[in-house]
Image 1 (cartoon, helix red, strand yellow):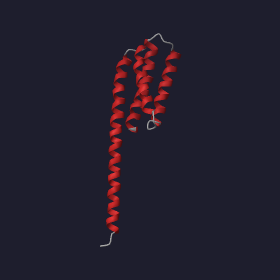
Image 2 (cartoon, one colour):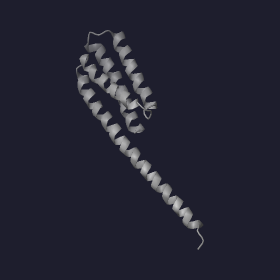
Image 3 (cartoon, rainbow, N blue to C red):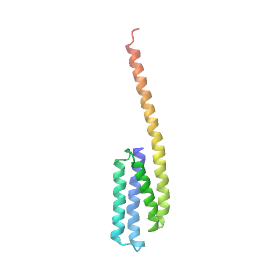
Image 4 (tube, helix red, strand yellow):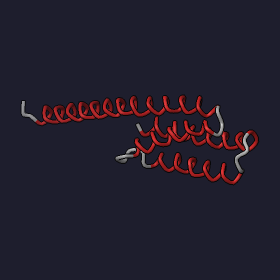
Amino acid sequence: MRTLCSSTLIGEALLIMFAGLVAMKLTDVGTGTIWAVSAVAIALCVLLCGVITRPGAVYVGWALQLAVLAGGLVLPTMYVFGVVFGGLWWCSVHYGRKIDEFKARRAAAESAAAESAVDGAAAPA
């Protein structure tokens, strides 16, 4: 899950940076306000990459998705990007957890197979 979610968050950080550049030219919102909000969102994306496996981090990621969607109030194109990245976030979390479960089952099966091989080799013939 960590890889998929981190990839989505880094892509989202880049999106927020470029959206800030566009918002500077197309809106009446002050440059300082745009960059203050964008910098906090970008920092949150990057920091969340490092703690994504901790309890509650996925919920913070969902809050971030809602914030990107709310960016449509300033730049209407962000509604589209908010929906797209919300879908990517859902896929990253959903399929990332499935991949983690599969890896855990496979590691347990390999461990059990290795133990039975060792036990079989150690048994007297």
